[in-house]
Length: 305
Image: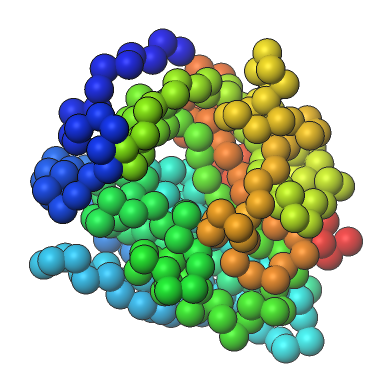
């Protein structure tokens, strides 16, 4: 895809943002969809079958966002725990709706075999604005660390804290979009006073494994399942996906905990971050949701097997 090098409209090139630039950026953000209508209403409809809880609340000015989690009703201390998260980046739509679709259609299949905890929309303010950051221009997916600067990340870590050492598998549902290259990476460079370096958006699904504890067979099991639903992203001409070496078909690695990424904040031996490409001419929104569901089911099936 073509990428313009026109300076980002907010900030001075080479100078990190201050309060003035952050306020200017925030003023430009507008609500484009409803967390209550599209997410909370769906969660409400699941209460008859599963345990639903409000684990925190975000108060941003006059706006209040309850943070919701869904658990298996047959929770047993002798069963392994799996964690499914979506919407850490609010604009990554299939992460949110894929998580909800998993609960609605498939979660009951795992009754008595595993305890599952699903947090479908970690960042509801960003969900409504179709954005990557929270109102403070902070990326929650770089903020899963002690004394987190992001309320969204801190609240999720507090929810999971009692289970942190018991989680067997954590799958975090994301998307890579064309707007990563046209909006979010240029905004990041401007915010941090760094030069923007154009990249290439991969066409297809891929996974991010943990370079500090790689699980190649686990990752490949997820890739194999998702391939039945949508296509897997190929490596670029440099043998990379978004600047990282492809270490197996459709798989790259990051040091998850070191980078403060959501998938890295528990002690789970099996971790992965999904990346769906919703802008592909070869994929529909329904396929993207289905790819996330397939990834979740395959991940759980693998660790149970």
